[in-house]
Image (cartoon, rainbow, N blue to C red):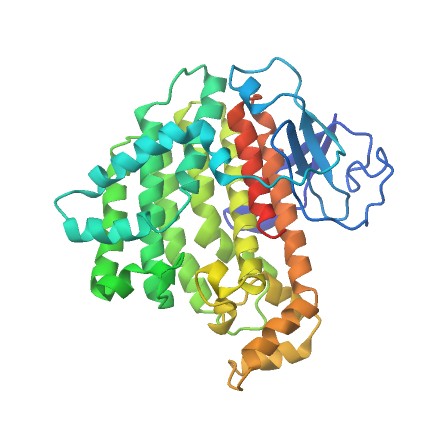
Length: 424
């Protein structure tokens, strides 16, 4: 067994790329499977598309070829219980052309999500019809319920380790709290960003006005905090409370660096953690805590959520340049237009001085935004951002190796791959 530690980047209480990788291979730590599979470490990476039959998963590392985790067990087989077989080994496998369906991805927790949808209305409170209507504007806007689904998947995967036959009420309440916090953050984000559309529909502040939108977001934060306190688990209370603080920190950090062409990649990763990954990391770790599993498993689930969240944010930032306004549900290049410099821009700035001039002018010239978008694409900003998303995805996948084989682990792994398929 080879033990490989990734390079650490320290940001106070956060550590990026700090998870350990344990892979069965004779390859050197910096060229994972390069020797054993006779593949050059600097070979090109194709886009990722996987089938659903057997477990086939990529493990990515910068400067190394693609590897997959492979198991002959299907999700249906894994539903029958924990396998006694050894954990899967990494092998290079032929790719499938079948895309991952989000509906199939969450099928194993479909009943849990149905119960969650019913409970959300009761939790928000029928005594506040205007606030409920505002929240429903977000709830019904085509969201995939990814965050509560991750709570249920991790809860059920770790419950197997703890010998639990069913989820506890705390697991279910956590999923509801996480969705409320996420919804509140979206309402406030749209007010701050002055966005009129979310997922192709009117935003809350566009429909009900800024006053109602702010109050609706505040109410949902407060309501989620009340239910959080009633879970009576100090560790989880601290964990989730920190997320709400992180949201504000992320917004402040973003606002203070608009049109700043000297922003560093590390700053971008910290901001992305605050705005996106913090909630996912707290969700997955909190789920494991309520399953009462070993501390190392809880930390691995935290690493999974954090790196999935970072990868997800990077992919979103790539799509801001590669998809149309119709696909995005908002104008293409919207972040850049507002001076929010994301990974593709940061990488492109290293190669193209003209891009700096355009951004620092705050797109004062007609057509300068379109020119900046083309420069980001032509200078390799998209490709390097994709590599960064793959690296974070790699760490997320490695973090799941502590879990037993089950349909829930398969879904967690495929969630990572589903995210990467968005930039196929």
